[in-house]
Image 1 (cartoon, one colour):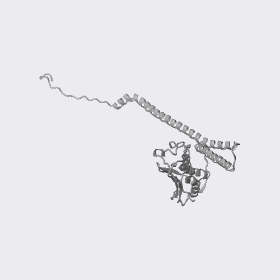
Image 2 (cartoon, helix red, strand yellow; image 1 turned 30 degrees about the horizontal axis):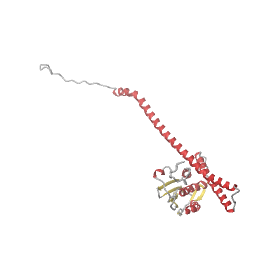
Image 3 (cartoon, helix red, strand yellow; image 1 turned 30 degrees about the vertical axis):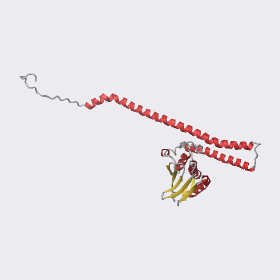
Image 4 (tube, helix red, strand yellow; image 1 turned 180 degrees about the vertical axis):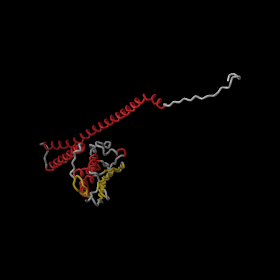
Length: 292
């Protein structure tokens, strides 16, 4: 109040009614919605593209590694066969019965090895095309295990170790393809021998047992073992665990992928446990045959 004699001013209130305030605010930002949506779509596309690029890069590295390993694996038996053939054709080399027998054995063994390597690649190609046809029949798991253990006994004893079998399965009948299932177990045994500790004896423990619903087979070795970060990837096709400078453990990275594929197609399951530096254990679970 500027002057004392002025009349006292009256306080008042002004009210504003805005019945469509929400619509007004929405109309103010409506033009931004397409831009936000476009930005989100662009961001998702960018992330997806980056993921695809890195995945393709990884597949390319795996493919190159596979080609290098395949070349190395195939060259070894081919070179051995070629050398044996040259010695057979060399007239300056005396052909004693012992030498002829030795050269014949080399050619036979290396031919089998070469055929086995080619079959490995063809087997995975066959599975990729989903054209595999199993010829299933009823077999005895205990009998299969004992036969395979006998086959590998010399290779394991050569390292100074031994194969131990625990045949505990009572209902050991399984309905499987004989060739593929035996190949799967052979792959596990072959890996155990291949990835052993170079200077230590190798022991392999094979066990069968069953419960009311499943039949189990475990193969445990005292070899190198597998690091935890590699366990989730060992069943992937072409994946190979890094073995440092070991050149005697080359492979295609197909063995365990083939094993898992065979077990899966027989409605089974395979699990792996490993303690790096102490050994690895594979456990195969198969359904029990129900009597009608």
